[in-house]
Amino acid sequence: MKAISVGMLGLGTVGSGVVTIIENHQDKLMHQIGCPVKLKKILVKSLDKQRAVEISPELLTTNEDEVLNDPDIDVVIEVMGGVDNTREYLLKALKNKKHVVTANKDLMAVYGTELHTAASENGCDLFYEASVAGGIPILRSLVDGLASDRITKMMGIVNGTTNFILTKMTKQGAAYQEVLKEAQELGYAEADPTSDVEGLDAARKMTILATLGFSMKVELDDVKVTGITQITEDDLKYAKQLGYTMKLLGIARRDEEKVDVSVQPTLLPDTHPLASVNDEYNAVYVFGEAVGETMFYGPGAGSLPTATSVVSDLVGVIKNMRLGVNGRSAVTPQYPKKLKSPDEIFSKYFLRLHVYDEVGVFADITGIFSKHKVSFEKILQMPLKRKELAEIVLVTHHASLKDYEEILVELNELHSVKEIKSSYRVERGER
Ligand code: NAP
Ligand code: HSE
Image (cartoon, rainbow, N blue to C red; front, side, top):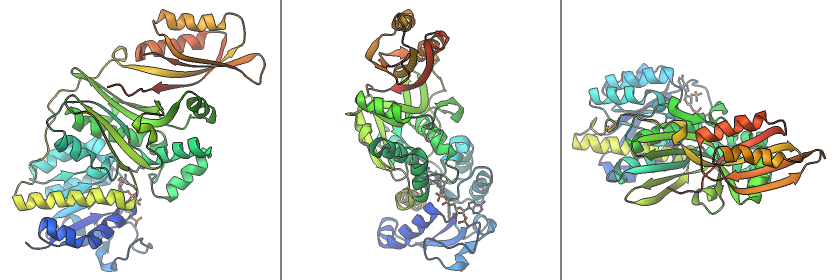
């Protein structure tokens, strides 16, 4: 078989890793696919930039058509990021019958259906393993490994940057801004880290996971998102005292035919397997009706780990080329989308309040919870430096989101509650 020619869009953190793996693993690739892989052209923004890998200058171009319109190029690897131009480039690549491998969750979370349709219409493969949890082969595990099961719950630490930040804040008491800078220098964070710290990056990945895991077209707008920017040292201190670890967790759950998907800082018992996933590492816990609990763990970001997934997708494309089955792997969702309403979503909650230290305050607070039939699992009360104030930290038993949101509104209206300092979901890991 003749060499497979690959065009690449982008030569940054991930693109450099792809070059390294293709160069270093030629023997293994040759053994797996029976032909050499040749990088023919790479689109970049700047031709003069210093590169992390040695690359012949004639391979680089700033004209995308040298990749997208080259009839010799069989596969386009997209590792440049961005959405609008990138969508246009990939639609053009597919129209020109080039298979596409992408690491771009921003694009797949929003334009996944359109790109899948274009790929099928043109008999092309579209693979995006690296778009969720970097080096962990989670998408293949959902689509192939667990194909025979019915998945009912997925919980994911799917953003390396925020996991790195929360780990350093929890274990070393490090300051948020300082650790964010370190994550950027290490290449984990997006060019604009807002999407990492505000939870949007994780939401995009949960959109992809929920769509594949539940075989239902979940949209980004269906995911309720809260990021990590409001977490304080005090929250982490109380979490520790109560035996919890704070993680930015994506949670997707199916009950009967309805689903809910969210991303939020969540307290996990220290003994939960996801609680020991630290630094930039990611993990996705998947519960299937037949298999029970499974967990997939590994590096969620970084040059070589992410490039491993990209190049594995490339191997998948080339194997399909040999078998003549490209463009047939996309499966249309089996179920129509049905989302739960807030009275159908249940969780436990951690709540931290500053209250006026007066007779009857506690009765007022418990009265509101009792009215909504929500009871407490844990309660702490501490005096504050300001003598007239006290701090109350409590963990509820299960409550519906509807009840809990109403409780927060009613607590805010109590004159004895000075401020709701923080509130987090608590997951015990039941299915
Ligand atoms: P990056 O380091 O910023 O690299 C982006 C590359 O694309 C650069 O080489 C840049 O060219 C090129 N580029 C960007 N916009 C371009 C444009 N309009 N025209 C031509 N070239 C353009 O990004 P990255 O971290 O490698 O991420 C790439 C993709 O992988 C993103 O979708 C990201 O979300 C995803 N991803 C990243 C990681 C990770 O750990 N970094 C993990 C999983 C997925 P210049 O070099 O000339 O500036
Ligand atoms: N910024 C992302 C993260 C890169 O921190 O997980 C991997 O998608």
